[in-house]
Amino acid sequence: MANLIGLSLQQRLPFSANVCPAISSSIRAVDSVRKLYKVAAAAVKNYSTRGRASRRAVLGVGALFWAQDMSMSTANGAKSFIASARPKGSSSVEQALKNVEWPEQFPFKDEDFQRFDESADSLFYESPRFVTHIDDPAIAALTKYYSEVFPPSNTPGVSILDICSSWVCHFPKGYKQDRIVGLGMNEEELKRNPVLTEYVVQDLNLNPKLPFVDDSFEVITNVVSVDYLTKPLDVFKEMQRVLKPGGLAIMSFSNRCFWTKAISIWTSTGDADHAMIVGSYFHYAGGFEPPHAVDISPNPGRSDPMYIVQSRKALTA
Image (cartoon, rainbow, N blue to C red; front, top):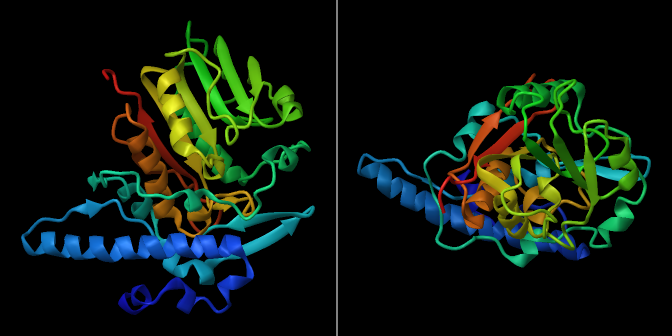
């Protein structure tokens, strides 16, 4: 591992990064993360010698294996990407956000949120996709988790917002509330969703402002789409604004995505790193309790993994 860290990512890759500016951007981002890792590793070692262990807000360990673990498949002309399928066990994700000491400033740069395909997202999502993007066991695990943390069905006055929504939310069967709003990119998909009481068509990468008044929702969900947000801090600040005090924001993700549309810092890092990335959004947006990660993967190594990073809006400013 030390030898790998000592090399730049350009040296480790078996091809020239100059062939694609987007890949070059990912490489620069990962090498920046590698430098942070080395600094933080030294700091952790220093703490350990004094009998204390301290976790730092460090990413990029999974990125060391980026070249080896890259896997693409093509279906109907659309590329999907397994960002990092390296098995690490559940503890790495669940431990990722424990006892974090965050840097003073948000550690990511604009280039970390670039994508391979920077064309208008409205074009990419123009045609409805009536498919699911994770397998059935992962869906069942997410639905079960929702059933454990959601307000009971038909609770008077409860409102839920599903951002980056589509034709299915994976809510428990028969789950109902007075108001369940879907905000997504494709109107045909949103119209098909039987859970929603209303919907909004909006591209959060163009306009991250949520069209709702302050303190509107008890719960906000986002299913396997947080990796497509190019202005995540703006979106998370808006989530904090429209949540009621104590309201819960649940970001779920797997290791699958449309590689061409996912941000570079996501496609160049692994599962535990992804938990740290999402956790950083909560932290630097402000107004949230410390985020935590949950690994709800139903059959590790045999079905899609499933992870949760969530936080509640602070009760007081």
